Length: 171
Length: 100
Image (cartoon, rainbow over the protein chains, first blue to last red):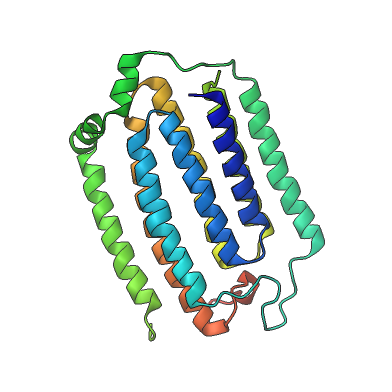
């Protein structure tokens, strides 16, 4: 993949994700997360996976994020730390501890990955074509993973019923 | 030259940002969004390693992760709506008792 495009999409996704975490307004957080997901779809295209890229845009940004937006607007979501009821905002020392924990995790992951020797992608047009082909994905999905696929449908059904029951007025 | 390491590093960064969101934020919706960031970071790893191995298995796992993410978002948001109806707030600290 073109290096410039990789760095562009990587920068957009990291900056948008940082914005999601740094924002106080949930509406802006959801919008920034949509930007992050679209740039991830661009990275998937660079990985010769157009099917995942399209699914990412349709399912994630088209369905899941719209669901989030609906809930944010439905609840007229209050801005954080301004919530009524006299809740104290998260104490500063806890914030420092949480930030240190996540920073140390990032450091650990980066350190572990930096010990890995550079592993370039093999430039094999046949392998690229196989990964790219939606036909191959369908064959493997419905032949080797048919059971997992069917279980997924039950999971969706249960989640649908559960969501309706939970959101009902009288539980 | 973009190697597999670049993709793994990017996904490690995104995952750490997601955990930072879980640690630092006090808003149930933002917490769910942070979980979505982490799921996407893992998806990127799956697709990159699948491309590296020349197999479609990584994309198939991504497909299942997306399904689980959709189910999780639906149930999680329903729970948030139910909680908001009781307390008119989204701060997790307001929901410390199991019974009210």
